[in-house]
Every structure is written in structure tokens, then in C-alpha cells.
Image (cartoon, helix red, strand yellow):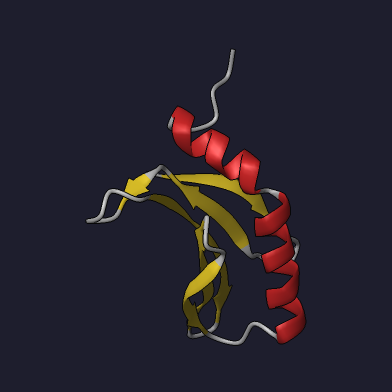
Length: 91
């Protein structure tokens, strides 16, 4: 399942996944940045905890990607918390 984090003024939507497991048992999650365009979407997906980009399509600039990497790095503990809880819980 994916959980919405924020939508930026340019339409970029940021979502994060629940915890996932690789075949070797390692847990991970993904954080996706996606912006609608005339012909589809600009997309960049990071995998945590490695912070590797696992998918990149479209026309995000290097500066935008650097900002997204910073968001992922600074927000990692939050993304993991949400993933482990299975979403944002309201009381």
C-alpha cells in the first residue's frame, strides 16, 4: 500500500510504501515522487534504507533530484514509522 506524504505546488506527489521484503529477507520501502505532464508523468523512486534511485523517468532536473534526495534522507525515520504502522494513524 502507498501512503501520501505531500503534494508540491508544481503537482509533484510524494508517496511512501508499506514495509516490503526482498527474497533475502531484507526489509525496505520506497518513496516515489511523481509529477503529471502533458504526456504522462515525471517519476523518481528511491529505495530505503539504501537511498538508491531505483527508477527515474521524465524530466526532473538535477537540482530537483537533489532536493528529493534530501527529503528522503531527512524524512527517513518518518517514512519508516509510517510504513511499520501501515499508514498514518488518526486518533
